[in-house]
Image (tube, rainbow, N blue to C red; front, side, top):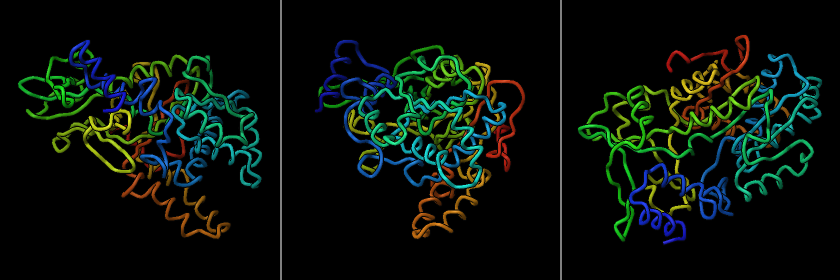
Length: 381
């Protein structure tokens, strides 16, 4: 029994059974022992999982090209802020800044102008992760700032970007019996146990009335209500600009389909997958897929319009990743190896299908972004 497990058990003994959302929040974000807060490397080959930015710098290049297009749509303001929330080990930021400072002639003047207007702020709560990011970004320290929350950013124009952030928000778990019941976590002296109880909030009841009103008996799933709080905070900080989200998930109709009757919760430890969130508290990642229909609605309630939604593969192909691949082929001595890694970003068998892209916009007009030029799937949300 590790120290975090002991801490969770004390909370249960003091307060009674806790919601799964509380359990997951402690497992991931406890200040002393939480998975993301402790001083252990979590991402990459030495960690428990990897993200798109670990595969190849071309991912950062494609993200940067899309953000430059946003800047152009906004009239090329002289002050443009990128806020990256949950920047992992800093690969994406490094690849974006490497691209902007590159010596190639391709769009050089545009890249230089954009860099001249750019403020890059990383939101990172973990001191350990911040140290890793600063080490990786040693050559770009004059271009990057750090903060614990959005508050220091003030009101700004620009883009809030996240990659695999929302899936790590704590979720409520529910089970359909004669009526919808919430899953609470207790402890029987030997192990954590699940207990059914009434829904802990009216917001949870309203959520399922809207997105899954007719679940079959025995259906187990989850709801990520933190998304609305997150996007409300983003809207309050964003004066004019975009929210650019990449994560694995589904529209509500797919999320709560009959064949997904055990939910989407999954855990990662040392690149092994588990469906038991009660093993190794604080030592394994716990995630759930994103309901993009809910993200869209939360944004609209806050005055932010959704302008595009599609798979990561579709987005990257529409954005012109083939041109970047051709350029790599001309310059690289390890092209075959690099291509194998790049393909994982956009092919259906990998991140290209599992991960979705949504861009939301606050401001006048209707941006028509290259990443959605092949297909705009908002109608499915």
